[in-house]
Image (cartoon, rainbow, N blue to C red):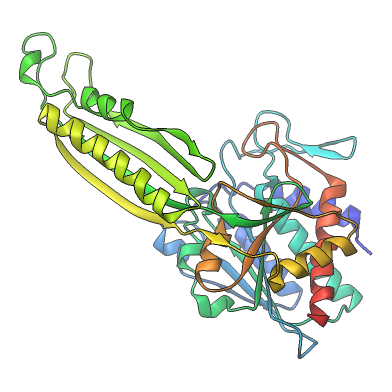
Length: 372
């Protein structure tokens, strides 16, 4: 049933179009055109303007032919990470890779290609289905920025499936909360060779704070990181200002609060000791979700995998995805793998057989839902 040749051609075409976060305009225009050609009702929301990007999220509705089937929601994101321009995909031994100097873009154009191929197959084969909602989001890699501006009423569905995982047999039903941290440490500038004692070295202050922080794997549910440090202007000037950005994640809310409090106290203590000023901003990036295995969305996913001759593996993730946002809307949403391997690296690759199974899985979810 699956047109493998067309699927490969589609995926190759997609990854050749640059769509770095915030710069998804060309790719979004193509997807919008293809969705309309399939007869879906398509709208682009205002997320692009709000994040100063080239495109908003694409929301599409595929009118159902069955009245009693649940309303199903599928999602994938349009953006990719760097280096993601001038991608030259290669096929060898049933595996698609980049030329080695860029990413491939299977994260997440494999998800987009699988959904689009499934929609075209439904149209061609006249497969009965309930109402289907599609959301192709922008700026996911920047911190789920596009999804955060989706209005719940535009995608309101009974069940959600986010095609943005790893292995084709994975069902991710649990993801953590994340709090983001931005701290600006303000010391005092001075000539580093003439009057260093008159200065307050902001780099030294922040170094003391970070040295006292628990960073990395805190426990099996919790992680933290300081990922960005900016500051200083010259070697002969005591640096007056430094900005750092970090995060903490946990599946357990109390553990997250404890870790964030610990990082905050380390910053406050170092600033007080050195008489530096601190401007601190802590805000929630997204909230955790956990879908029990007896919930309809999980039962349906397992059934569809069995129909696709895949043995499902249920597991948690330490990362965030658009699924965190959709679950906060009250739409039970899980993450399904589409086969991408070594994503976010120049060795990223995907097996063609996994993409084919991905299309079959989407179609089997839709078929299984007829009796849900």
